[in-house]
Image (tube, rainbow, N blue to C red; front, side):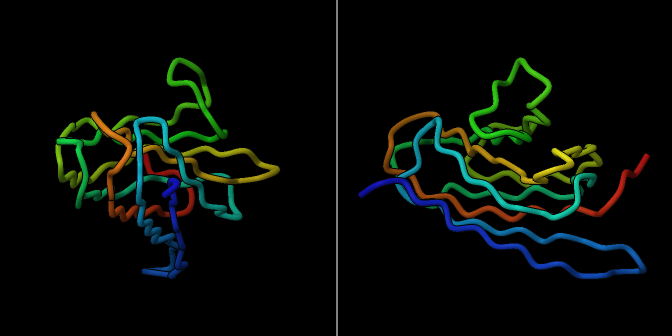
Length: 132
């Protein structure tokens, strides 16, 4: 089978602020596998990142976020790398997420440490605007 990353987003207003709750289910993921989600607004703050390696050869994941397809970690297109490398990641953060103003799309790589047969479940929560 080939890599598949099936993602969706639900927008909710909580305490007067717009939130994006993103979920993705990946199968046959390898280190460079990447999925994306269109967000419609270019400026967000990452509040929560949860991901679980549910099956496959890999022992851990080290997720990365970007604002361009096939982003390079050493460029401005790289937004963040999660600070934990593990089979299950649960981080609460306040990371600015500034996307392209013309096509505000978030790109995500789970970055498994081995194999191309991995399954990963991810949930990301963003709040619209910048929290300082």
